[in-house]
Amino acid sequence: MIHRVLLSLCAACLLASSPRASAADSVTSKDILGWIEWVDVGRGPMRLKAKLDTGATTSSLTAEDIEEFKKDGKRYVRFVVRDEDHDVEESFEARLVRHVRIRRHDGSTQRRPVVEMRMCVGHVNRKEEFTLVDRSSFVYPVLVGRNYMEGVILVDPGETFIQRPACDRQGSLGPGRGASVARAAGQA
Image 1 (cartoon, one colour):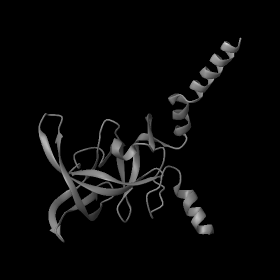
Image 2 (image 1 turned 45 degrees about the vertical axis):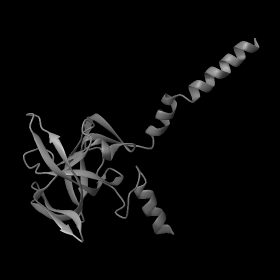
Image 3 (image 1 turned 120 degrees about the vertical axis):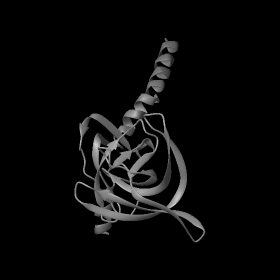
Image 4 (image 1 turned 90 degrees about the vertical axis):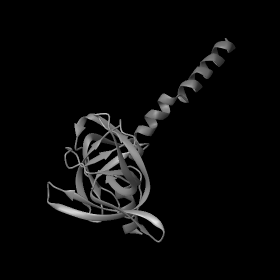
């Protein structure tokens, strides 16, 4: 009898501490977004359509007139982001983090600069790495990769445009915290 009670208690403890239970708890702390969403980049901010791609490791941003240069002995990139749908453009300067070689669908490779940029998707405002490439021939000017979404965004592949960008422009916030932090700051 005591053996069965102990066995039942052990089973209950194992179930309570299982990854499934903790995964369910963590789902509530993540933004659920569609596979296509609006994102904000830049000072404007500029609102662009983005594909949330769980198959891509690194995010990618459309960029034209890409020019590498040195400033104070460090490597930088100057580039222009154009929103062709709204006939708007913004110039950027960002520190060059590295270069990557991307294998394209036709098997060829392309060398791309990588910069750190801040972007808002839903309530998530993060600074992450983006490859720069002219995406004007693509449907979506921004590709949001796993590096940006990890730990804070879940993608619903059956939905699009679930949340408009709603971030606190002051800094990096986790999911759903932008409005509450702004309200708390206003009341202080």
